[in-house]
Length: 497
Image 1 (cartoon, rainbow, N blue to C red):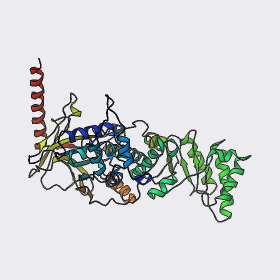
Image 2: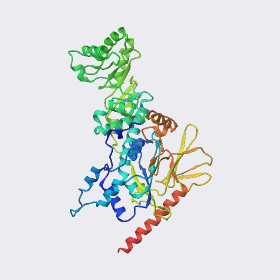
Image 3: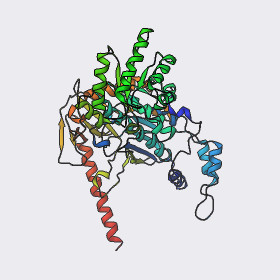
Image 4: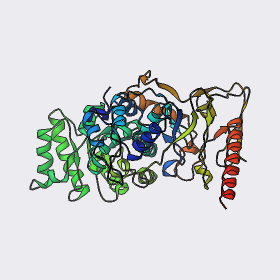
């Protein structure tokens, strides 16, 4: 199945932060290579001040893990790195170890197109600590960005209320890779087409487009430009009408549309890219309808996002197709998701698992220990709540969920309530056991998931907070560990005086 990973060479082992390699080297030097670890990838805050996020990027993660390796030229480069004393940063034994490395980790992940919320593990990696550590940077890179853009696209499509949204962001995206990843994620989030032809080829996304102002400006008159374009592409005529005067441009499009109809073709649409889109679209609709072109679509563009589209819809704009570029592919107002990758359990050979927790002066940054899973409770057509629990301790009967940020907020879910565990097995012992669905199926999953989320959690202003909590016994264990660690820190501080 094609993914953006196919655009690169076979070796991406160096696509990481240096400290992942130095920590891995130190683990090996200290004889900790057989220590087993569990890491969870999650985010702490929903993007765009919204009520949900759309999980995206897993297919690229799988491709990356399957092809993980260090090539000879990678190792040669690493051998040139020097420490502060001028000596080699890594010794030859470590470089040989990297060259021979074959991943043996096990990975569980939430399928793409699933709605996710703060603190929920999107990916869980279990295996030798050195391998888990080496994977951190790229997993965050792939999941953070695509989840962010898929979420933005879903919000924009919600604002469009079922009308087609086209992704037009290639020229404004952050580099070629950003353009490709954003296009894929935008399709997952609900966009119907893209202007990016390479993405159309690689991902199978429908491509669409009009023409630019430069086309019109190459002719003496706008009418001549439309005529010439219609002669060249009579089956793809969507005219950009705002080069000089938008409504006059619509009238010119009507004239050419009549000639198209006479030759057995049809005018597909007109596009407005500037000015008062609400008023212009209504006036353009009047001209088109009065001329017998009731089936001609009006496309609106010009730095649109969910808030502008919602405003235009509220003003009665007659736009039926929305072209969204810059503010989608750059996640304009919030350019990073802020996902993190934290160790939550360790096991040395022959010993039981030890829960691990990161303390912070900010409670939101204190992590949750354990081998975590997410259970989603639901009815036939709506989500009820999500429980984060430890796979080693699944309580019987009803479950009480405790808000990780405010333990006074709880929710009890009755025994027998329908549910599904969201993290599914993806890799075992370094071998893939999960077949990613086709991109169109992932996009359809996003649509179904959004239909199951209460409208109050989908609104843009002050969305209702969907209930997500730690299962009570996990919450209690977390609190016990927090108290224990704080006592140890206090004792250490006292001993240092």
